[in-house]
Image (cartoon, rainbow, N blue to C red; front, side, top):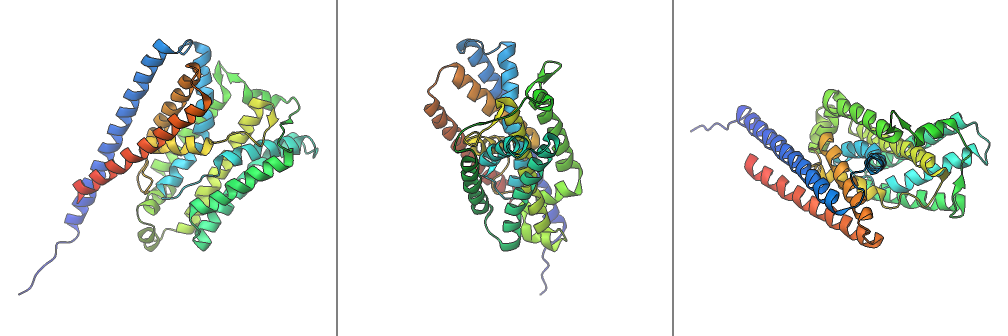
Length: 337
């Protein structure tokens, strides 16, 4: 007696059903975030003095850019099933490198900016190469980079800020255009670029494929190693961009700056619905996650909450977001099976 095993169509239907469930869950997550942000605005407008002032709202946009500029790249890294925890030290190191290069080392300012961007890209690519070539877990590779860059930035400055000379370019970066902070404009432009890359290019589709199943992606002809190197090179480059914005804002390079930034970035991405297991994520969700994290941080400051307790709140938010993410992923897995 012969038996036949269903192939093709049932699998395709299961994949389609799982895909629809994933998209529906992502939409629900985004709607929930919008609702949470609205509630935060209502509560903080009633309890935090000056929260709705124009000055404070512009400050929120500026603070959001600190997280958002790197969060777009981090979204694709996590979608690919990887992680990068070197962001904070990379931003601080870039600000120090700019101050040292344009000051003590007497490098022309435009060239110093290009050096910072190139070094950031190469450092990120180095971490990606360790992951791609030797299979070192990305957490370990970027943890090493985290320690090295923080130590190097502090060593180069003796733990003290390095002043930057007045410069028109820095004034633009630290200023605003038509009343909107320049960092927020840069963040918005990068968001549009990454949204296009993630949704409309072969590279973006490859990132999702690698995160879904790296071995299957390799068998399908995708150069997984190259994808990984590009991903980490991109986070390194955007960390350098964020470092330039930081230097412009502070008027100096500071090796002790951006402490914990990597956790705010990761929290924003995960809260936005990107799965830590890889293969699923949304830049729109990350945008809402950035807004959520930034508004909470701003509100805690206005309410006069102790700075150390603010870290407690952030930690609870991160753990809660990961828990919700895991539970939703398990529910989707059960429904699509």
